[in-house]
Image: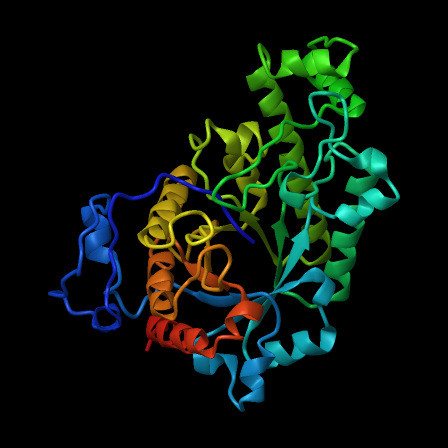
Length: 390
């Protein structure tokens, strides 16, 4: 999973490994970044353990490499894993439950490109009335295609019925776009006949019969109405996912992996382009897993950016970071290389910034990459075991 570029901080804080783990009150930051607030300075890397942090997870599959070493995930402070829904295995789930871990599934919502092979009419339509090309190869599917929605909901139900999982996280639940990078590509969609008809029915606004003419009106004088309409459709998908979960496995959590942009970034693109309305989705979700991949999104030397984005999400959703709250924030932070490299020396710092309140959980992206560089796994171990209450 991934994310785009925000404003770069004017200076960087790099703390030594020694200062990262010595939680004395007089620890001094090696270099004070101009954009770092007093709150961040006082709560950055020196608080251990972190009793509010109930989840210390790994995204990207089963951590069998740890087991092969004669150790357990608990030895590394890990108490949860996220597995792609296509890799779920009942025996493995039982094994990891037996080891004391929670097992969560990742579910591809709007990015099942293979569906278009037999249903090309489900492709998102651009302002020219033609299928929108996949930006950077990221092919989305139209949320207005009834067959696709039915397919996803049936598969969601099947997964919950088949596997004894502790929750499901929606992934790629946004409009057709490529935002998981420092320079996003954000085409306007979906101007399909079905979408235009539904818009007119729901809003009472008549549109031209010609798709390009209708798109011009929707992106012009009716832009805000069009944005709200599209956001409502994506939110309604979340509502239906929730109804299925409540029906099949009501004790499971429903989470979402999502873009970390603020409402104002890229001229409000999180709503206008991606059709993500987190406050509207909140009644149906238990956990928000913001994706502040600092190296991927142009902040490779400034992991403090992670904490700022998590805090901004908490302010937006009015989540304080108390384990007793109904809604939780569990960031997924970048430790594996994707884009610019994440050096071993930065792993503990990344985890420390990502685990500050309002976060009450954290996970690393991603196991297949991290496990090939065992020094990073050892760094993860040092951080997670120090976070864990004694």
